[in-house]
Length: 488
Image (cartoon, one colour):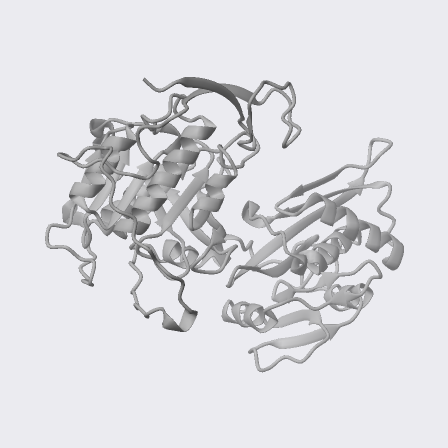
């Protein structure tokens, strides 16, 4: 009988301590150490799968290996698997890499299970797919599939490749025991498997409760070894904390190949799938989906979703072109400046970083002469899209100035540039890609930093300072009245 011992694990960082402390010695957070009991001598090695008819203690003889140079390693070109969603393939870097481990996190009810169930249904037309529903019964998953209109007769993907199997179908496994799941993966040998969710699994070797730091860490480690050894693509659903980070130890995100966040406003219908880590593609790529009656539907042209009404010019608005990964998205920014009723003015942002707004307001007051220290300022992006890159600085500055002067910017103009503390306009990356996207949507003019640009299909006006950009953007565009054609 193996001896049992107690130790204390931090629920925030996963640090291990032999005794209890009120404050974690590693991450300095209070009251996060939890007692766990583990066996001092485990009867099975982590990552060893049990197969019927074989003893757990049986191990293969170690084989001596030697290192190789990079040129000595043989090339094995592998085609990526198509998920059936163009947006999901884009976020993954061009498709699903066989044998990869993908972690998807998001708020409760945002649509993680819906997205993965619809994706598994489309993948099951060509590949044997396993859906492990650790939080639901098989009947509950079937009811959800019927509500979403998921059925074998509705599948339309028929392309075949080296991973296609003649008996491709969607298999359900309502199970939380990791040993049982490993045996099913060994016997079924699916091309793709979905684990929903990692916090509901438990590994019988450990005595801690499901969802604890040690259970999440060891279950993910075992699944990673299975994915690499058997070339199975694994999608893992992860819960998030109240701060929005994926629950569990940080090592969870280090173990997997790709980390995706599914986010969106609960009062809006659109959802964003954002990549924050990807070993096989660009990070910070986004895919846009819309929640409809039949589940999630991909949005192939998100710029139309985040654009306002371009038929009429309104005061305090400016249009920018943001780049999320390699995708340019045209977004409308709205600003409102009004007299404050309090001793200190209010600053509020939606989709724009708060500290970035404070910096731009300081530049406008110091370098342009707009007295904003006694005025409330509100800035929001259309559709609630989070724009964190500096390319939106100039658009925010122009929108705030337009609201202060009660003027409007030409709705056929896009504004791109970073604002420095000295009032200068700096260049940003992928400028030609942004301009071509704006021209494709019908914009006629662009106010950009000074530089050399090729033929982008629109008029380009280079500026070097914020004052020059405002003079160009607000020239001849007075406040809209009943006769909008009248100019000053």
